[in-house]
Each structure stands twice: as C-alpha cells, then as structure tokens.
Picture 1: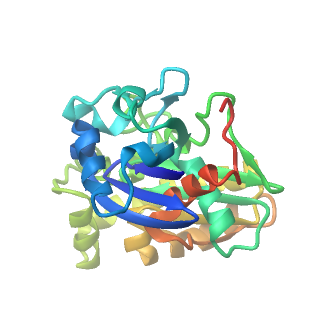
Picture 2 (picture 1 turned 135 degrees about the horizontal axis):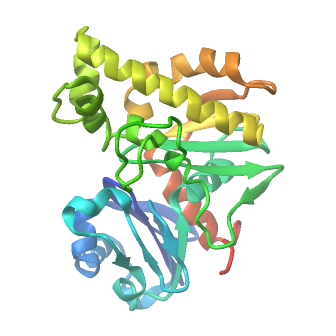
Length: 297
C-alpha cells in the first residue's frame, strides 16, 4: 500500500507519494490548497498510478500549533485570509490513517535520515513565512508531549517591539520572517515595502532604510540562534526556508561570526540544509517508513 506525504507550509504545499520509491508529485499555493484539499489532492494523484483507495497512510506536516486529538491546526500567518483553524481530519477523512507532525520536527528528521550531516546533535531552523525549528539530540528527536515543539519564532527577544502574526509582540518572527519583515520596516523605520523580496533587493542597492531593516533582522537572528545554541548545544544548526535558501549571504554569513562570539559552549557549525525545500516532506517519508514515530501516534 502507498502513503501520501503533505507538507503544508506557510506559503506553499508540497505533496509526495511513496511505495518503496518516493517522489514529490505536486506543489500548490497553501491557501488555495487548504480551500480545496480534496480537489487539489486528487489533481496531484492524477499524475501518478495511485488512487485514494490505495493510500494506507497520510502524513501531514503543518506550520502552526496542532491538536492531534482533534486533527486540527491553527496557522498564525493565515489570519488575514480567514483560515484561523483547519480541520485536517475532515479534509483527509477519505485518505487512510492520518498522522500530523510539526513541520520543524519533520524537517530535522528529513535532514537527519536523508541529508549528509553526520551529526547526532542537529537543529534545523526554518525562516520563511514564519520561523520554527526541529531538534535532534544524541540521535533522539525532541518532541513535546502534544507535538508542539520548536516554536522558536515566538521566542520574545525584546521587552517591546513590532507585533507578531500570532498577536504577541517582540517575537523573533516579528523581526525576521518573510510575512513580518515589511510590517517591522513600517513600524520601526516608517519604511514601506511591498514584501520581503523588495527589502532584500533594496538592501543590495544600498537603500538606507532597507539597510536599517536588515540590520535589525540580523540582530534578532543573532539573539534567536544564540539562544538555540546555548540551550541545546548542537553540533550543527542548518537553515531552510525561502529566506536563507535564497539570501544565504545575508542570513548565514553574519550569523557564523556573531554566534561564535555569543555562544557559551563550543559554537555549532552553521550552514544550509541539504534537502532544500524538500526537508519537511522527506521527514514525512521517514515517518511513513517507520524511521520516526511521532509522540501520541
């Protein structure tokens, strides 16, 4: 029997299917996917030799607090679209056994089993629409009792600061995520940018306001990553998500020196993830193949 893997990210959703071999089969805009889960999933399956009836398991990774008992999740970055709570149990009721995993946890599992890091103490950090993390220590996946582990983007890094998508203030995510960078620019520097990409492009063109925004982002990233390094003491911290994958020089190069100065233990090796945008979906592959069993499943 085959299994389906669905990585529901803050911006895009990836679908993959496996039955011995594994392949990524489709990519959708997340908000569009969540409005028509059945239709979009059937559309993706049309490119394969599988039907719903052949799917024994469905593994889902989501960016946001999950409720495994109810099979729901609350995506903090979708509030403007009206998607405040998503019932995955109902959406995938025709697709076999349903397993739900935090996307940061799935990502570090994917990197551990299918990447080439050679580290038993590994942290994965994603910086994209939001910020999250997954942690493996001594080869064991660290996962909270209810699966909601690694919400490092909601670490408070200042006493006061810009509003986060979750409604809190001065969270790391409020300074550095793709969703919140333009809001931070307007709140702190009275600078108007259409999106995060425009900020990065303006920075490369020596725009003075963009330079202030990126400097504040660097400051937040240094605090967030140093805290992760000091709490978990990993051998390696690897980064995924659209922002570090597409702007590596602006994100990782400053961190390597700054975290080295601030880390109380031996500074971790800092680099990009091996699997690019497919870290999460390969973590779900590991779940379906029995390499990792999430808590309470």
